[in-house]
Image: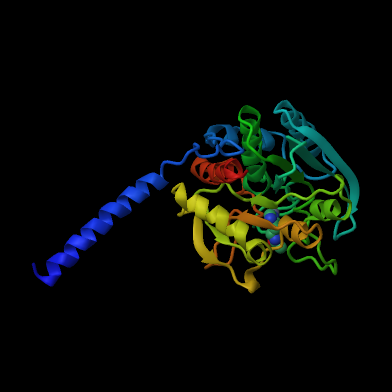
Amino acid sequence: MGKKLSILVLNLAFLVSCGGEEKAKIQPAHKEKPREIARVTTPVFNQDSAYQFIQAQVDFGPRVPNTEAHRNCATWLETTLKSYGATTLVQEAVVTAFNGDRLNMKNIIAQFSPEKTKRVMLFAHWDTRPVADKDTQRKSEPIDGANDGGSGVGVLLEIARQLHQTEPNIGVDIILFDAEDYGTFEGSISSMKDSWCLGSQYWAENPPIANYRPAYGILLDMVGAANAQFPKEYISMYHARKVVEKVWTTAKKLGYGNYFIEKELSQYQAITDDHLYVNALANIPSIDIISYDPIENTFGDFHHTHEDNMDIIDKNTLKAVGQTVLEVVYQEQ
Ligand code: AHN
Ligand code: ZN
């Protein structure tokens, strides 16, 4: 018997005994401890339902603060969220816009499973811009705001409907901020800093719920246009990089990588939006899912024009965003 063969025999013996030991190891005396919390299967996001929720908002007319459409829509939003089993709270205040307009604003807050400690905050703005300042026609008239205002809320109402049907392991708060879109008009001269996002600024400075500390927040803004692209926004990456990665990884896993693109915005492309104040003033790590063209450096041709109506809303985009956010929420425990 040569040396090589004896080594082979030894090796074989070792392998066999190893395998035997392995077997003993994988048959423990006790069955594996069951998970403390059962996994919940993520429900299927219904894009037709989300679309209907956008249509319903647009049907009220432009949701501009101090108008009847704005008041009626607020009532409908609260009633709808209540109908899905949420504990609701409306934070009302008067805030002053950049031009001195005094705005009667309402932040609409809906809590699902308020007794749960671990929570995630989902938010969007529900008001619409009072002017079409980027249009060439009817610049002083308000816009429908199907995408800018309607889409984020539409997706969140569909998520609320799903939360009612299937309870996730964690608590969820849906916050609809007001007076986001009353910022400085194009061409107007104003010295006011922070003229956008008046509702979220007010909320962060006047917390309506004591000791509110969700694990993180996700803002949806302009999430309904066809072929939308969501780059990794700078302020989101700065304050909540892990949340960005969690959401973008989840989107890719679900096959929505064509919407949630592998592109990081630079510091010079940082987007002022409600998540800025939720991060900086309320200290809740938050991200913004916002459609933005990183090459053209624009929000799209529809932005702050009369083109922002139901015609630009695409159910495929609503599905990509809604299913991704649902998956993130239902995988938490
Ligand atoms: C600015 O245009 C400075 N920020 C974008 C925030 C926004 C406006 N989101 C929707 N409308
Ligand atoms: Zn806007």
